[in-house]
Amino acid sequence: MNQYDFYVQKMLELLDENEFCSSSKASHRECYQDFREYLMQYVLMYSPENADQWLKLVRENKCRQKYVSWYKYMEQLQELIITGTVSDNHLALHKSFYNKVPEMLKIELDEYIQSRIETYNAKSSNLAKVYCSRIMVFFSEYGLQTIRDITYADLSGFYCADLHCSTQTRYVYLSHARKMLSFFSKKGLCRKGYGMILDDKIYPYVGWVEKFAPENQNRIHTLRRESLDFPSHEFLTAIDDFVERLRNKGYASTALHSARHTLTIVFLFLDQNGLGYHPEIARIWFSEIQPVIGASWRNWRRILMVFEHYSTDGDIQSDKRYTYKPDRLDSYPDWCKEAITGFLQQLTRGFRRETTARSYKYSCMRFCTFLIKHGISSFESVTPTLIKEFTLTDIHETFDGRSDCFTVVRQFLRYLEEQDIIHNSTLHLGISTGTAPCVKIVNVLTDDEIHAISEYRITHDLPIELRNVAMVMTGLKLGFRASDVVNLKFSDIDWKNRTVSIIQQKTLREITLPIPNDVGNSLYSYIKKGRPNTDSKYIFVRHKAPYGKVTTKICNNALYTILPEREKIHHCGFHVTRKTFATNILRNNAGINAVMDSLGHRDNTSVMKYLSFDEERMRQCPLSLGECELELKGGLL
Image 1 (cartoon, rainbow, N blue to C red):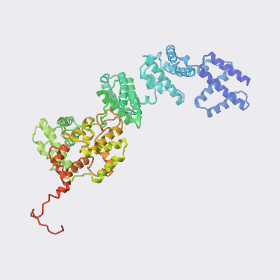
Image 2: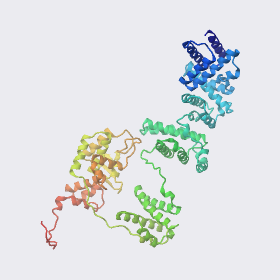
Image 3: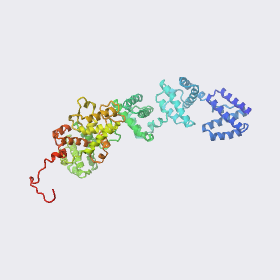
Image 4: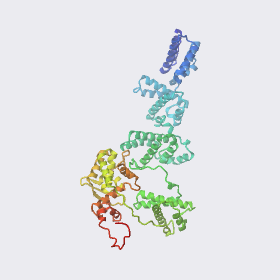
């Protein structure tokens, strides 16, 4: 055993003479000590055969990396015992990587290690030197002489290289590389993206343009010059401001982290490929890498869409609703698309709501689809016979639906005539104008349902529940439509005089109403106890970031939450509260004029339907059959 210890000591001295790093010497020492304990345990002498038996145990019980290293260490010891030394070639396999680093890279490496003295202890500093040395050696093998020579392609090669180590050790290499490159980027020796890209959560999603589909490559090259108006370094700066605005809008930390992560990857893609930011380039990139994103791709897509609007508006719109499906109108020929677009623009200029214009669009598209299927290539070729055939082949199941479609198409044809796109000024007469008005029984809330709403208001106090109550009470006691409820602003309410003044979304007519106590208390409770802390001017807001104005659908949800049975009644949503409001006014003998003023109606046409619920006065109105000269035959009275 003494002879074994002698050669081990000589081996360690040889490592010192060749300036091996402390970690390498410690690894040799651990190997030889472990083998020594094996020999003592089984009372054996050193021999190559015993070394082979011990290495088999190492292979079974230790990690692969340690087995490979210790196998080489025992080969070195055997060579030392036989020859009295270890050849340079054999020893060079384990020579310190630091000594292999080219001179200029070594100077830069020393500068980095020196900068970490205050944050690393002696052991950590030595380990950082070992890992960073190997990284520098890798770069030198690519022909690099200084950090300034590094490119994204070199970093891609390093990331994809087989470092012959475990997954955990590879992670450590990447971590040291990011820290070192971040240090050099701050000194202006390399690009900022170099310190970000070597990350398993980032690199796989960055992408190279030359690996994209040919049509996407061509489109990106077309947009390259335009994109440079928003260069990648400005995009990187904008990320911080964008995330801060998200934070101010109340987004949670996970959403902020996701936004920064996604946009950082976009920056690296742009910087790596010499591009600037352009919304279409970002969408092309997303379409290419979406398959590898996984389940969170919708979140990435939304972040890109929000940033797109931020890049044009300079802020984040809390009330913005994003659509991702391509507009079907874009697939139509230009002669159809331009005509429909012009018609819709005329509608909006005439103060038609966006939802109304959108419903008109589909009727126009249905008409154009019919024309295209019949080989028509311009509106000038449309004939009365063709219009008649369109009306006969309409696919609507209900008479009302068919009538509404024909009314829109008739208006569309008149627009085409006015714009001189169609020269026959009477062509629109070939399609019917609509249907006669239909009288329906008004559906209102029962006394039991109104009582259930009052009970819900008393027994529920969670934030969403307070919002539900305030919405339903506003509709029930003020007669507001859902569109007026969601657009209700703080400036609309005069708390001192207990009144609310709004301009109705549908009629653009201004009304002022007194606020009943139960409505005022419901609004106050929601604002003070349930409403998220946001600077939105609207009273009713979403309870998840961004805290913007809610949609009218939330009013329906509020009613159905309080009265679940109401959801089963067809075509009877939140508007039932307005109908109940009008009916209650009539039942209280207020008169038709009072109903008109409260509802904001200009005439009594819409009010007359509520008279059927004024049962007391309806009993005063019937005429006898005799006065009408009618005879009753059969039956009982």
